[in-house]
Length: 82
Image (cartoon, rainbow, N blue to C red; front, side):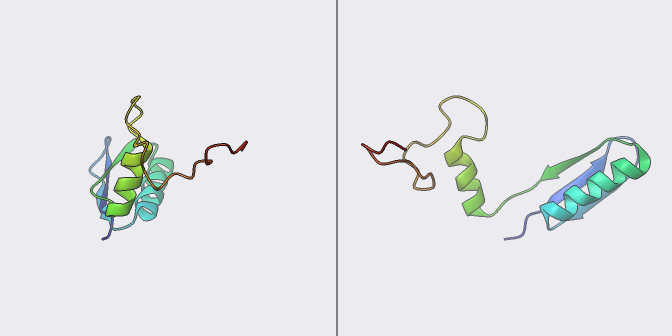
């Protein structure tokens, strides 16, 4: 599933949608550098696996958000000194 991201400028009418976060980020940076404006982006959806990884990691920044039972984290086994 492609990622839909929309870049919007808060200082002018610039608005463009992209199927790639990389292309959206590049366009946002280029617009800000070329115009001195402030742009922002909105990310639609990510692939289900990416969303799950983010949810499991607790990327929202709140304590207790991480999924301690996730198979996506590589934890040392009991008794390892790592």
